[in-house]
Amino acid sequence: MSDIFKKIILLGRPASGKSEVINYLKNASDEERARKFHIGKLKEIDDFPMLWTWFEEDAILAKKFGKPRIHTDDEGYFKHEYLWHLLIERISLEYSKLMRDLPEFHKGNTALIEFSRGTEHGGYKEAFRHLSKELLEGAALVYINVTFEESLRKNRKRFNPNKPDSILEHGLPDDKLEKMYKLVDWEEISSASPTHIDINGVPVPYVVFENMPSKTDDPELLGPALDDVFQKLWSLYSNI
Image 1 (cartoon, rainbow, N blue to C red):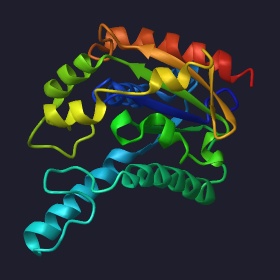
Image 2 (cartoon, rainbow, N blue to C red; image 1 turned 180 degrees about the vertical axis):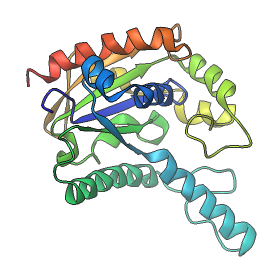
Image 3 (cartoon, rainbow, N blue to C red; image 1 turned 45 degrees about the vertical axis):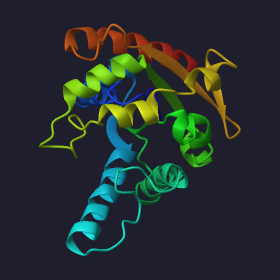
């Protein structure tokens, strides 16, 4: 299929609505997803499961073996800023392995790359440096825009302490969310052009999904909103 996005990079603050967008797209029929949104069968590459594995491993090392934690301190913060960038390198690596194993993947399939970054740990500016050209070429980007206050509200609402590893139900304590995500650099990195961001020499088309008031909480509002977002993005993408 030539009328679908090869890759979508989905960004936004925690609890901005990224997981709800992915869930909506995954639950649409293949025909509707391709026709309305120009998206094929989805393959997600998300750094949250990678990150959560580090937390779990550190907890096992400390509690079961009495050994030093490798990635995080006792308060659950990364010991080194470069670990945030390592996660992006891992995303690029996962995409590279996907292309190695399934060279015909993009005939009917779309890779969806999801992550979130605040300026406290380098922001999107630093994260983008670690995205490979292989991943960036043929990619398009959607940024889900909410205020920090909205991110905080939805983060509290979705958090299920019994399932902290869940994509749809994980959350952060208020103080950690504020420290790591109150400030973001999206407006700075997107200010040069209203349609494209130059990432490592690759012009990546983008659209901002304004999610205030929230549309991702209501499937009846989310469907039309996504239709609008992806039609605008396709117009930019198909002209490259």
